[in-house]
Amino acid sequence: MQVGYLIHGTSTRDDDWFPWLEASLKPRVNIERLWLPQPFDPDPLEWERAMEEQMKPVAGTLLVAHSLGCLATLRYIEQNPVKDLRLVLVGAFDQLLPAYPQLDAFCQPPLDYAQIKTKVSAATIITAQDDYVVPTNLSVQVAQRLASKLIELPTGGHFLTSDGYQQFPLVKAECLKLID
Image 1 (tube, one colour):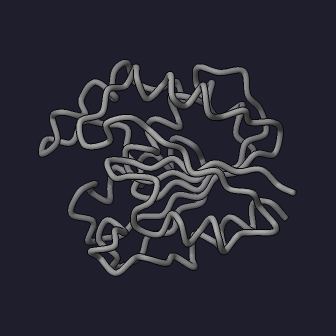
Image 2 (cartoon, rainbow, N blue to C red):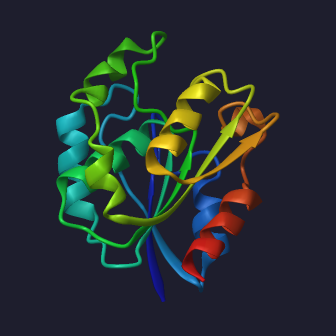
């Protein structure tokens, strides 16, 4: 069975479409939803430690991340000896969000995309033009830096339960494409 990890942002592993994705990908993919400490007041060093304790990716591992989880995932890839990873990043960003200064520490230092790209075999970035948390252009820039597939939806907000996302079939479909 294919191995995968789901990395949440400033929500919890049990929020939004995360439990649905885990259940809907079985038995093809065994998705483990990470538990990251203090998601509403996150600390990059605590998240880094938690990710290193919970993730043991091997070649071909699927990583699905949302929002701040995307940035934490890219940092994890940059800093660890991993290879042949497949990514689905939803609402990704790698720059400061002025409305969320508590996340600034995650953005420093800038990511080394030259290093990250050597460890990622395929990636898809999903964003919405009406994302009210992460401006669409920031997700587009992450896609360009990764030289990845970009899916830009006209609507969807930040893909939270409050935006109508308790299920997210597009993410499931993209995951299955990356593991086939």
